[in-house]
Image (cartoon, one colour):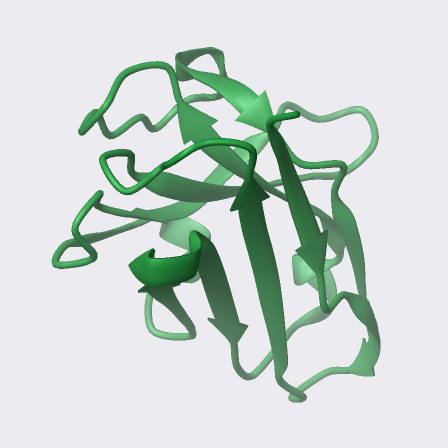
Amino acid sequence: QVQLVESGGGLVQAGDSLRLSCTASGRNFSNYSMAWFRQVPGKEREFVGAISWNGETTYYGQSAKDRFTFLRDISDNTLFLQMNNLRPDDTATYYCAIPRGPRAVGYSWPEFDLWGQGTQVTVSS
């Protein structure tokens, strides 16, 4: 069974850090980029960032610049999102995702067909 499982969310205070993880299983994803999105109720899923299939290139959404870092362990299909200096407007459900095609990099949610169940991040002021 192909699945993505996120972990690491929680309740933190503004200025704190969190590290989210996403593990993909069920097949070999070494030729696929991996991405993070986030969503708050009533809004469209927002691209946070992505890392290329070989881990050499990262792509940042506007919300991730300067504070978030993307890492990938290709050997075990794990994606990480290191979030520093968190703000209340970072509060959302965070999802990892894999795009439809190998070596493709997507920036909008319709380009992805594999999603995790999400992990909630809540930042209090």
